[in-house]
Amino acid sequence: MAYKQHFVEWFSGKQIPSYWTLTQIVSTCTATMADSVDGGMLFQTDSGAGSPSASLTFNNKRQYTATGFKFFSVCKKGSDNNIGIKCGMGSSTSVNPDHHAFMVEGTLVSYKTLATKDGSTGTETASSASLSQDPFAYNIEGTSTNVTLGINNTLDITKTSNRPTDALQPFLYIQSRSTAAVKSYNVRYLECYNT
Amino acid sequence: MTNSIYEQLNEYDTVAKQRFVETFSGDALDTNRWSSHGSGSATMSDTVNGGLLLTSPTNGAQHLDFSPSDAGKIRPFSQTGAVMIVTSKMVQAQYTNQSNGFKTNYYTEAGKYVIMAIQGQTNGNSSDNKIMLKSNNPSTSVDTSIASSAIHDLHTYKLELLSSSSTLSVDGALSSTGFATGNCNPDNRCQPHLTLQTAEGTISGGAKANYTYCEVYNT
Image (cartoon, rainbow over all chains, first blue to last red):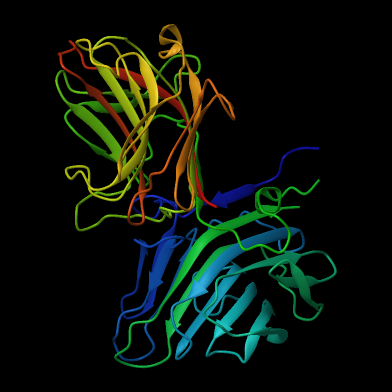
């Protein structure tokens, strides 16, 4: 069987590799390496008004198929209040890509949540996993029949509605939900591949 | 078998800690990852199994680490639970020291460190022609008893920081020849560092070493 597209990001070193594109959506955010044990990449907003936010992507080089991919990551929020994060696979660099399959955490939702969008309609399904500042691993899988979300290696959600169909890229997003407050989260691992 | 690297490296129901794998392949050193310090060089080798060729100045040291500046140190590894695996060889025997391991500070500062030290022939020092586990917290120097004739061969070194001690294993040795242990740890979070230097003499063109692999992870 031919090897398919497969990407591993260790987020280790002095700076973010240049194949990532940081897209400022509101105000100015940063993506730097953290000087902390297991810190990986520190994704951080500024303290400006209007919900500072940004995405980190492959700048619309979409090499992953929506109906046959797996995505793995480990992340940790820096705070519980007034921060929103979306991580997974998306079709653009915007806050709400037309096609996506995201794990959503933070003030945007009540539990760790699987969000999908099929080109026009986006819907969410909450998991049973609480919001927290603990580091956690999660995985998203897209197949021809459903999208699943696993939290810490336990399958939590199987979603069949509003699944993405267009090609996707890895997507990380942060949003500050308050003014005058820097918000952050750390990502220490990201892997995705076509199945 | 799963195709996921994550699932192959991590036990079920665990959250992965910081890790990276460096294969030193390509047309140039990955300068998004590594900072190179010194007036020597760090270039890719055009030889079979050459990997990275680290070259010191004629008289001095060349360092690779994660810190582009003192104020910008990046230290994601735990001083009480981390592993470094390096495959490397020194090109020449005389006046050459290689040290790879974990360090708390910027390259210009001593800080605290635990390293695998490979020392060539200098001027009759007791450490000549030895591969050792070394630290400065507290001062530690433990010989792995590798034969002097073999210290410049290509070896795989595994350095592990434990909760209150450190170990060095050469080519998979778990005891005796090729293994050393000491009650030493750095005192703060660490960055990986790879250093090649001349020692007690000058080398025209600089001391040289090849690195073909480096993996570091928290345990």
